[in-house]
Length: 155
Image (cartoon, rainbow, N blue to C red; front, side, top):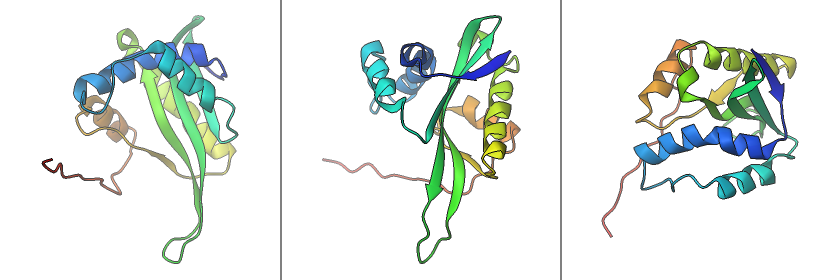
């Protein structure tokens, strides 16, 4: 296995399909069906931003997963101090490769990126119905520190 940084937005769009399909199946009211061209254009528009890092996980030359991470700088406010984090926007492993250590290998690489930038905080969020993500991040020692709630109002 190896992880490499990429700007191949077409490959990222293809690797995004499993996680996008999952989100659409769990929350069809919020996620459109996967559309390769739309997702490809989204990655194309993000790929050159200085604070974004796109990673591909390969095994024997085959791309089996990806991660989209961001180096975030939080400004000082009267009630909050300045800090940095490595924020994981998306991580996905091909469904047939899950539960084989690929996700952990990719997360270890993300932790190393944080260390290389002298950052001691990795943040992420996931959708509540995504119980597999919850278990994976709990296994990695992630702790809940903020909850986002909503109330749907009748029209």
